[in-house]
Length: 386
Image (cartoon, rainbow, N blue to C red; front, side, top):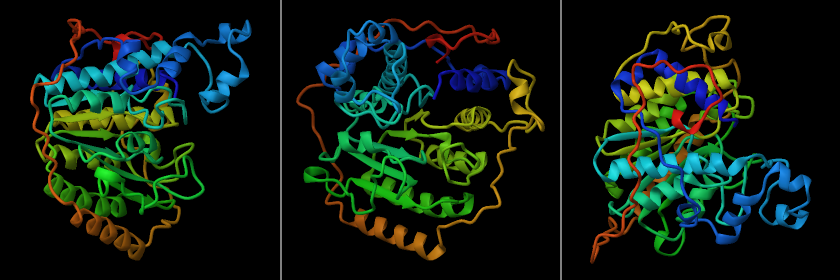
């Protein structure tokens, strides 16, 4: 989860000249006040003050660490600056879409879907996705959230579990696997009943199986929910050979989800997420950046600062499905598909939220556009890269 993987993906995309087809801007860092729009004040205060130095000098005790779930799975580093950058990128992407300054906005440093209101979880400290969706809801009637990370998008689902203004759809590994949530019978509650969809999957799912489940479900969601903006969490740990994930998707199979969502011609926010094999994360997100802008890339990788990462073949599409068993039988997938389609048939209506007045929208400083002709130099990843 180190930010370095985002820098490698950004570098590869730029060496494919994709930056010439986009506007690359420096997002404003989310303030503590911005982050408190979802997270509790006590938790935000703790995040903004904790560091390896404060722990060394015992300015925080073990009770605080346990209370906010920081420890082995959520280590302490100079984390608040990263949280501000990640959250600022997703809020800034939402602002771009709200203003109609862009039809697709990408923040590969976002997608940290496990963070809860008052605690960290699964390497996620601030839930940039929830903050971005809250910004979108100031302008849009409803928001569709789609998660293809190998882990269930639990933090986002929890945040919007009782509202019909956000539909969450997650395709994930289920069972003895973090975070252990996302059963197919978890469908939302209260006003949000039937607005949470979960597709629990087993190890080894391949491109064809995933496509045959993803496309009909999303097609039906778009028909019945009629969201005019979509947020895609495109975690790359569902790729074949990931160090933690157990799915078996190729880069093209993974990107087919983005390609399909793009075909509906609605504003789209694309976010990162998990992914624990750096070279494959970079391959995936560079290719998906190309899908977003509508170009096809050469398979042979352009020379770049991290070229040695991609040996021995130095190609874009070397992430091929492994010779492992697909533990998702056609019968099981058909059952999941039918259950989710039946759930969608229970939706009472398309949410309608008339505003008495337009809600306050986030005012952001003028963003500094990067020099599009300047190749990125080898350096530590900083906020201006995304």
